Image 1 (tube, helix red, strand yellow):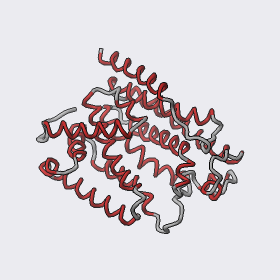
Image 2 (image 1 turned 120 degrees about the vertical axis):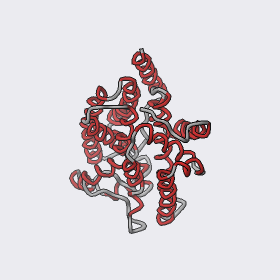
Image 3 (image 1 turned 30 degrees about the vertical axis):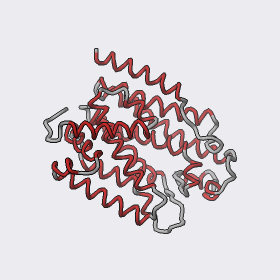
Length: 310
């Protein structure tokens, strides 16, 4: 869906070019899926990614105190909301991402509340009151809320760019986001622990007799214990259940967008499979999908895109 916009023109082209460059440099798994989209939708996805990336970078800048990070995010959000209220502000803004995102929001009828929720998600860790206390989530319901804000909301934005008519797509997109984020959490257990963060629910740690301290303070590269493996396996099984929603979502979005979603699901599910094949040893080496495999998945996606256009 497109509409007239007063910001159309060379300035907007440059703004989208900045977003594409950010996605190409930072998106890794996401970027391969972006390439399987027609150009207008690809531009829109890159704009949303660049917006999300900047919010995440502000929240994760550990050279600054949490209070300072909150202040900077608040100032950034104030500028964004000013841009939303007044198109002329978008043109005058020093942030080209705002210009591109405002255009994307208008073209694809994306509720601004979804972008507010996205920023809420990336700033959740900044709410921790005790400076040295680890960031944790008590129950899976608590973790689900976090995953919803940082991943499902992205899915709800993306399906508006992909195109859909069946309202059932929204719940399926939410659950697809949960699958992706649980996969990220499994992959990043060691890296997150090094940053004083444990996203595995505390109730699950207790159920599997795994102490929080054993995750936060372990010998570098030490393999998982038997209890840790069963804990990680449980999270993987939950992710598998949510991946079923991804397969149900595919036929509900516009035909020309399906190859991109298929690429994304294939890469993320492939990452989960690699974690499982490694017997959940996410401590010795960070799991990733090899470039050759990503390119093979992309090649299939591009072929499907060509067929969809025909």
